[in-house]
Length: 149
Image (cartoon, rainbow, N blue to C red):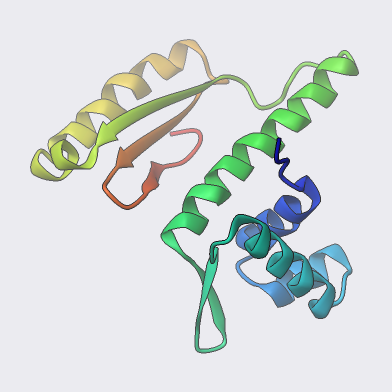
């Protein structure tokens, strides 16, 4: 069975969240070349590009967007496991995820507004619930609205 190297995934995730190698390297107190090597190792392991260069910037590819989304969930769950084992209440609360097929979301733009309004109105009962509305297209799944709405 193949196993994903979670250290490489973590470095990728930090680069994606920071918006680039230089910022992530500074935040993590690592050299730019160390972080770059870890990213290249992950891309080689996955046999896929997660970023593309645009001038001096790194931009997530559609696959990179999806992997970053999975990494968000993986590392959020990791924090929750630590909270649980330490007897702490999770500060992250419950998450409600709604998937929408892009065909309907683009044809019927009011759907997004209705979904957020309907689900958001029940949020007053549970202030620890966050909402993620996903539009699933033929190329990628993209987050339309982030936590708490």
